[in-house]
View 1 (cartoon, rainbow, N blue to C red):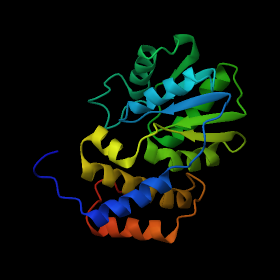
View 2 (cartoon, rainbow, N blue to C red):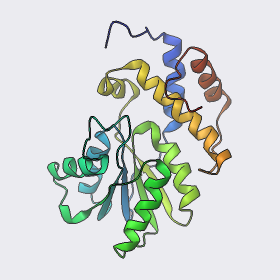
View 3 (cartoon, helix red, strand yellow):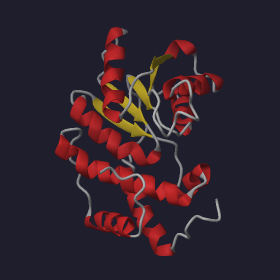
View 4 (cartoon, one colour):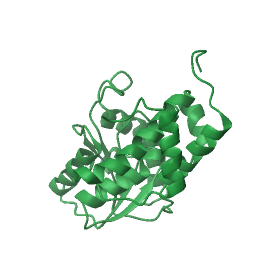
Length: 221
């Protein structure tokens, strides 16, 4: 971590852990018709998808995602394309993977993946959403709004917060991302993008406190 990064206090970590745990849906992995790996900066999504595939939990895997300002440098050919390549390296057969290379947000991840599956003659009744750990709840809320007639299971790499921070290498950025995703969980239902999620009082208080402390780089206007 760089010398210019602020020191994270023990109390800030405690509040961050509350938000981290809230974002996790706690769904146990179980067999589904298809899985959708949601594109992001985190190649761990592809690794988690490969692991779950090898455990026999689904026969078909969609990777979805184009480029965004935060991923273009790392994944110049697009998130879904790079995720597919990593899954192939991890032993997932090419015949099991579909690529949706255009989605620019979570809503499009869901709707374009649904359309791609339909074009392939696949009409799932159960879908596993594989995402960054702290994106589980937002992906669930979004898919529940846009694809309400399928059963949803959320999954991610089984990492503790400390391990995830080490994988990213920037404590403040991780807290900013957790705070930003919680803002979207709160605000997107008001805009019709997702279903509402109950936010416990202690989680909301932690969120407001971290915003007050300046963890705001991933907030939307």
